Length: 358
Ligand code: F6P
Image 1 (cartoon, rainbow, N blue to C red):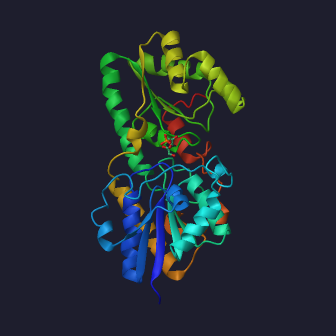
Image 2 (tube, rainbow, N blue to C red):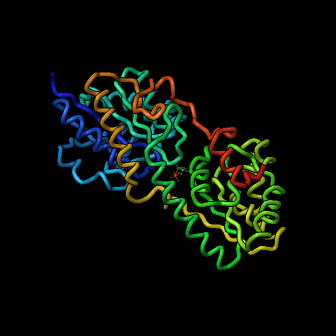
Image 3 (cartoon, helix red, strand yellow):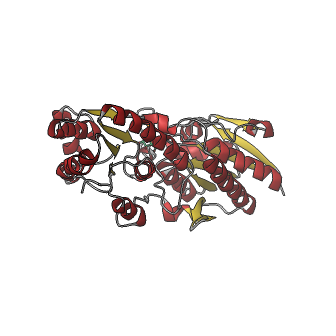
């Protein structure tokens, strides 16, 4: 069989496990076939601008435990992919031309929802594409889990643990804002893993009265502190009825740039308990992947190598009911996997007395 030329890129927000997945694809592919990898730099931006380098076996050594991505990444919003902007570049045509110029047999794209939408677009345009599911948000449709998620859960839970001890010492309410704009998986897991009193997620709009009630009745009657975990995209019930523009307008008028600042202010005003806000932000995406993610990313990578070997393109790797498999890109692109508000995780948390503010 002729040597296969495989382009590989990482796109969107980075996360621990990207390098483990890159290594998984490469090592397994080297064992299965004659292959030349071409690293595309900074995600789809690199494919548009033709920034790439030929890679050799040694480029993949020693990266299993390394955080971030050796290829670099960028955000190239899907909604603009077909829009010609000020630079006058036809992005889709440029990506197709560079794929051809690099003489690629296929392109492996590691990313989340936006990445998969563009991967599907390129697949529809006739390129051979294989996706791998990464994101700390765990919100990619069609897979039980994405790599990067559990590393972020470990970090976020550690934040909740550490905040617990200082909350206890000072007798404070601590509002911890965790990542997750549309999906509350990370906040749900870290909140449960860290024993939060209140967990607020985008899937369940909150009522401030319920939060105050929980902090006053349940928490402050039995001890002197409260832990409130808030996903960054959480909305109050009123906000959930508004259009995005109106919501942003209301927020800027209120003087509180984020939901967590506003929630903290109201807790302090209404209950009298001293309240602080903690925002770990991108810290949640940093550092080395957890052993779980190293194994998962390696499994996903090796499976992608099998798809390359078999010429089984137009697919993305997934964990389906606990088994590594794949979905057609066209079947999952554009769909999101949100927290099931009636599901087992939420039910268990409620059984434990956690308030979702509803
Ligand atoms: O998609 C991953 C994520 O970390 C989200 O949880 C968060 O809302 C967003 O990326 C932050 O994006 P950026 O890195 O561009 O600030």
